[in-house]
Amino acid sequence: MNGAEALIHTALAAGIRTCFANPGTTEIPLLQAMDCVPGMRPVLGLFEGVCTGAADGYARMTGRPALTLLHHGPGFANGIANLHNARRAHSPVVNLIGEHVTWHVAADSPLTSDIEGLARPVSATVSTVRTSQELPGAFADAVRSALVPPGRIASLIVPMDCQTGECSGPIKPSAVSSLPAVAASSVSKAALAFRGRKPVALLMGGSALGTRALESANMLAEATGCRLFCGTFPARLERGAGLPRVEKLPYFPEQAVERLSAFACLILIGEPEPVAFFGYPGLPSRLIPEQCEPIQLAAPGEDGAGALEALVKELRITGPVTKTGMERPSPPCGELTTRSLGEAIASLQPEGVILVDEAVTSGLPYFLVSGALPPFTYLGHTGGSIGMGPPLATGAAIACPERKVVDFQADGSAMYTLQALWTQARERLDVTTIICANRSYRILQIELARADTAAPGPHASALTDLSHPELNWVDAARAMGVPGVRVDTADGAVRQLKRAFAEPGPFLIEAML
Ligand SMILES: Cc1ncc(C[n+]2csc(CCOP(=O)(O)OP(=O)(O)O)c2C)c(N)n1
Ligand SMILES: [Mg+2]
Image 1 (cartoon, helix red, strand yellow):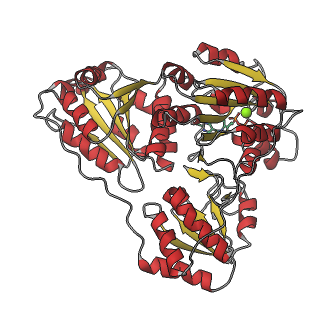
Image 2 (tube, helix red, strand yellow):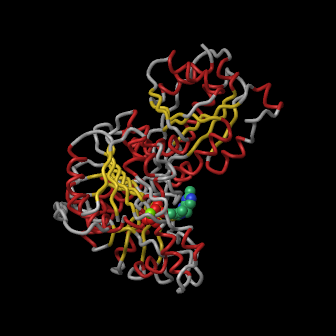
Image 3 (tube, rainbow, N blue to C red):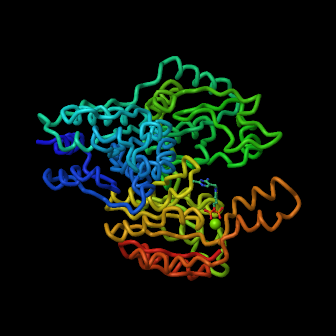
């Protein structure tokens, strides 16, 4: 067999059965290998940011490594922004990047570039294969690297002759390493904070936001009165009835510091110390106020769920706990606002939804009313690199075909990767996209107002305005093969959401805010 076939066999043996691809000439042997070796599902993205964002969504929902296939330095570069979000989400992703045949690189032909140099900043490991014989082994190493807890990006550059050359066969992947348990001393230190009878809060991330961990957090909260927080942009948070309410840390630093100033101790579980999204004059980078002591119970690469269980045990807390009941807002009517839109979604959202939140300034009212809905999964905007939502929803839908995916999506951000709608149509994915059509980069208008009390001038205004020419999301969706409707009232939103939630398949609702 050739190197490409050995690589596909190795991938399948590692449980990788989907490849988010935008190929070129140098990856053709890998395309042929996908036909020779049955079992791999190729998913075409019409822009590399769609492939990498979909890989992130797939990895967040499965915990398994997601595979991309990208073309040379420029193709990889197009995927970097969403790899940045994936890296912040600790998603295990393996990038296969095609390169010229080894003897042609020195010729410096048009597509030649420093691929390793482009890959390094977003990758935990980068390597370039030298021979076809070493290709499956190098791939297995990349998979192992991606799975190092809590999950990382591994990039493998594959010259074309290493794909076509002879290879003795695939490699058996090594066993997956699980999250290491926290030291007993960390548990005792955290327990001590509770014995002090001072107000304590938990800040949770990673595996500490899964169902099992949240059940322990619920026991802790009920027994001790501690408050539960996650970061402003959690990678994945299980939410809904039966689970405790987890508050997000506020976005603006002055609000976050104020919120945390109520506590004598902040116990960090699967999260680093929180910092402000941006530096503002006169405001700190670190959000934990002086009088609040941070205690790292579990680092991001450690077993947060296990640490919470150990803490419950150490404090001799025994169940049962009161589980939160179901609570939904009633379907709104009248004016369509971020609040009524959030209520409309929350009033109807079916159990088991995967909700991707790239609603930017339109998202908070929804988050506040969705804590006790039928259980669902929330995926946040981890890296602040916009254009995450449509691809992330695409990958999540491929990972979980039995679940409805909702992409709650700001308009400006959606324009970066709207090609993902085409992939949703082609793969018949069950994704409802809700465009928050405020026709602006609203967040930047808010930031302009924070920076200066005077009204912004014409250039600053123009650079944050999307109203002319007017975007037409229903037409844009139709062009990608996705049906859509525009709504401009809360009752209209309710009607169309009912339809979207009842029928499978991709659908887009343009909500005029
Ligand atoms: C890749 C990337 N480019 C640019 C930015 C800067 N940026 C942050 S938010 C934003 C506009 C967001 O507008 P929209 O998605 O419509 O959300 P809204 O603020 O209107 O709610 C921009 C351009 C970014 N964060 N990431
Ligand atoms: Mg907008």
